Length: 319
Ligand SMILES: Nc1ncnc2c1ncn2[C@@H]1O[C@H](COP(=O)(O)OP(=O)(O)O)[C@@H](O)[C@H]1O
Ligand SMILES: [Mg+2]
Image 1 (cartoon, rainbow, N blue to C red):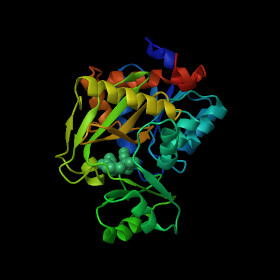
Image 2 (image 1 turned 180 degrees about the vertical axis):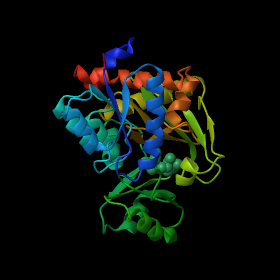
Image 3 (image 1 turned 45 degrees about the vertical axis):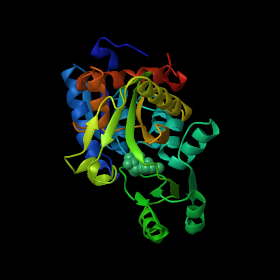
């Protein structure tokens, strides 16, 4: 990984945030924090709202690189579309490239890749609209979880313990575009692991006070507890190693966060990778970094450093 010592080496940096996705407000919150941190460290950083404004500014030659803190799909900045545009303009940026971004946005296809490599991910069924959800549920068995394959922030996610509750869960997930994903509900602990360059940060054990880490627990409730590191000794080492293998398997690079469930037997199950995780003061990656002795400003600096690995065309950002 590249080590930058002088902020001038970054050149003029566009911190792209906001945009038009459903996660606009979270992205703006993250972006403002990132911008302030980079400025404090002497980086010539500027806020840009959304992709069209970014592309105009880049074509006018205003920026040397991009710190991408947009969240969301459908051209929202996290799904490979922006990454492709930046590649074609030859502008270095933070985070995963086209493949890693696009594949991570699709939970079903992420799981297929993991499965093909023998990595643990809950048993699942990918359900196009109109599929026989009851037959799929009998095949998977209860309890199970139903979610939209390509959303975030736990929207449209329902835990289903009995067949009578299945239709309502499917109807809720079907409000969002794309296929549905049904998978075995893992009962146990929720963990998330941040990757920064080639470093894996201490895991976080998330303890929501409600039933699971739903939208409310993520953004509204003040009583969700975070334990970091989430595990000890060999168990923590194994979890971190799994997270890095899972991240690499999807072609991810730069930085990101891997969500995992740990069952009551201590087995880890991969759920998904987030390629542009939140960077608000309440977000998970800053918590994990802090536990590793990396303050918020240093974290932003290191994420920005990973843009140099793209610039050199190193696959997976490996130096
Ligand atoms: N197979 C599963 N078993 C248990 N809980 C799950 C499972 N899948 C998802 N969850 C719960 O739902 C939350 C959201 O699911 P996730 O797959 O991470 O999607 P996203 O965060 O993109 O909405 C998780 O953080 C977890 O609390
Ligand atoms: Mg998640």
